[in-house]
Length: 225
Image (cartoon, rainbow, N blue to C red; front, side, top):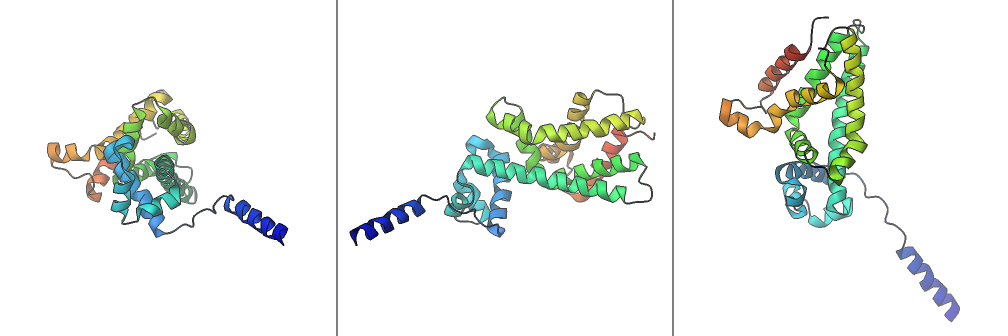
């Protein structure tokens, strides 16, 4: 009898050491990721407090720990979510362009992608703010960003740019320089929105203003071919 009790207790202890099942997806998790991107962008990683993120999301602090574990994991998932959203939107634009009768018109595809990028950054200015902040310092988060996300995006931009330059659709600018020219031209308007409002009176969050900015980016970069 004693042996059976001991075996039962041992089994219970082994069960307690099993890893917890992955937390289910849900609206609260999405709100936490949205709030995290904003707070990390506003205050930087060190200045952001998980309590403030939970409060902005309207969620319990314990729920943040349940879903993400710690602040580092939350930061990574918030960034990955933003990159995933951007890449999904741009992939959908490419697929739509490919399905049209004028699929051979590379300039139309490039223009659609530029406009899609501007619209995404207009809706997600926190994404550009966070990237600007993290990318200016050589540290583990910057290197994680490069290895897990930025290198892939940069390679896609370089591939598109090479084909566009061969067709005379883009200026003959080296890929590395074009990468940063494109990101700065597309995103700085939104990441520095507070300054823009004071300096110019324009509101970058206004969709009509964002469309004017997209027009300007297309006129600046794309040639008629």
